[in-house]
Length: 250
Ligand code: FES
Image 1 (cartoon, rainbow, N blue to C red):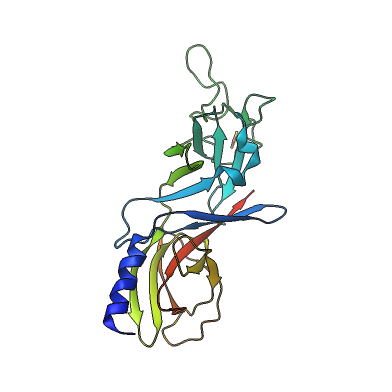
Image 2 (cartoon, rainbow, N blue to C red; image 1 turned 45 degrees about the vertical axis):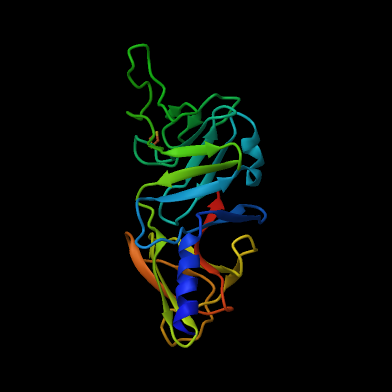
C-alpha cells in the first residue's frame, strides 16, 4: 500500500459521520451504533437510534429500554410528545434497581423493588410541598438527547460510555490497526463498506498484529474504559471501517 492511498484512506475515514445501523432480530431488537471516526475522541459518546426501529415510539407515551453493556443499566427512551423525547438512566435513586418502562395506562414508570413511581420525564412522584412520596428520594438521572424530525433519529449522550476510534494506522502489508475506547462488558464489532452510503457488513479481525483475522466480535471484561486494538485486513483499495457497539432492546 503506497503512501498516497494510505493518506486518502485516512482522510476518508475521518470524514465518516456518526450513524447507526440496525436489524430486527426476534425477539429483541438488536442494533449497532457506529463510532464517529475522529482523532482523538472528543467528549462523551452518542448513541443514535432510528425511530423506524422502534414502532412503540411512534406514539406519545411510547417507551423502550436499550442495553449497551452487560454491567450497566439499560437506558430508557420515552416519547413525551410528537417533538419531545426524554432519555433516562434506568437506575432507581432509592437502591439502584432497574426502573421499568413508562406505562401509558398507569401514567408512570415503576421500580419493581420497592415500588417507587416516576413520571414520563423520570421525575419521582411528589406531594404538594415537593417532597418525594416514594422510597426513591430523587428524580432519575436524565441523559442529554435531541430529536431530528427530518432524519427521524434520536441522539442520546451517555456519560462514561467509552466509544470512538482513537487512532487508525496502516500496518503493512495491507493490514490496518484500529484503536478505540471501549466500555466495560460491552460487545463490539467491526463493519466495512466500500462507500459511505453502501451497506456496512461485519468483517473479521485479529487482536494481534500478526494473528489470524478470524474474530467477529470482541467483548471487554475489565472495569472502566479500556483501550482496544484490532487488526483488519484491507478489504479493498478504499473504504470505511467503523467500530460498532452492539445494542439490545431489553
Ligand atoms: Fe427502586 Fe427501592 S430500588 S424503589
